[in-house]
Image (cartoon, rainbow, N blue to C red; front, side, top):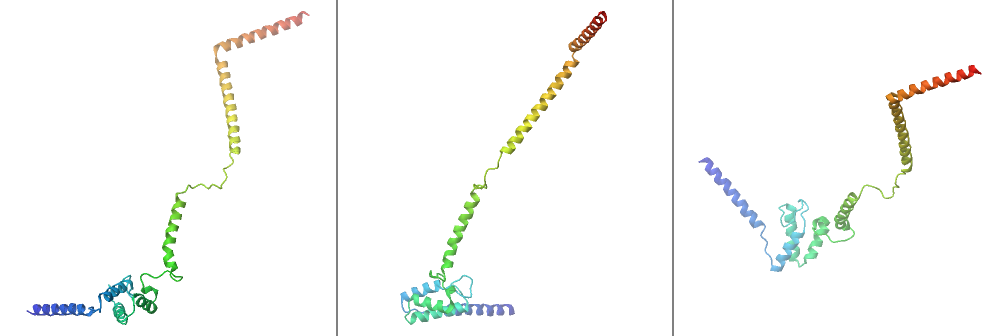
Length: 201
């Protein structure tokens, strides 16, 4: 039974707070035009305490005070621009979601355009080839001369090796050995003939 009574008491407190909240925000307008201007102004003004929230949607105390002041200014006969200017004078440019383009706010308006242009510039730079047009081509004549010299030396070495192989083949072949022995015999016989001639004289 105690739980039921405490639950009923809690429910009553919650219902009364909801009713109080609903009656607190009721504003009576003199005309439909005043209501539209009020809605536009409260949508354009930013709550100084809230993170990116207008005063129409904010439940902060300062936002409630700003809404009451907007209603007072509209009741005094001021138009939308005069109410916004009053709030900007009191709370600064931060209070207005759409600050006008002037010297003080030009950086805010131009920064997104500058960022987009910078991103395009970086993308174009990255897409270009990596070589530099101003850099002269390396001088390949020295490398070509050195390569030609190495080619000639290689050809000479290959020719010498081929000659050495040919000589080895010729020396080791049987017909060459026979010719060599015949040459030696003929040289010996010529030497003997020469010595005989010398003896006869």
